[in-house]
Length: 166
Image (tube, rainbow, N blue to C red; front, side, top):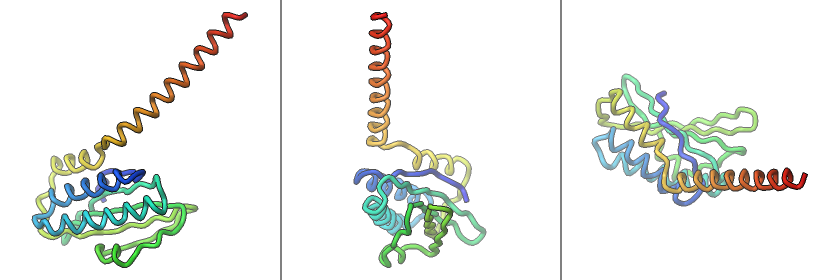
């Protein structure tokens, strides 16, 4: 499997990001717009389910490239079994469940018809598209860094103040 990246599902914006990223992956590979739309709908439903059941979980995205078919593989891990509705399962050709320690992993395979020629350049572009951080992810990262800097600054002020009193 060619791993493309991971998409954290932390908010409703994440659901939109996941759908958009997978729509772009499918559109770059499949000639039929219906294929892209079906994958987008399926990933959107999976993302909403994860947001409701396991906020903070991530969707891992990859491609399997075989002699007879190319498929988008979507996987996620949760701390408890995830009940997938039949409406979601109907989109995928293969569904596998694994349990490793405390993690319950679901892997869903979406075969694509009419696949474009997959070369290193296209694969790199797909990886960048999936791994690209959304505006919300960038803002959250910025907030975390600012919080860390603020805490560090406060510690420095306390240390300096304590040194001056000595």
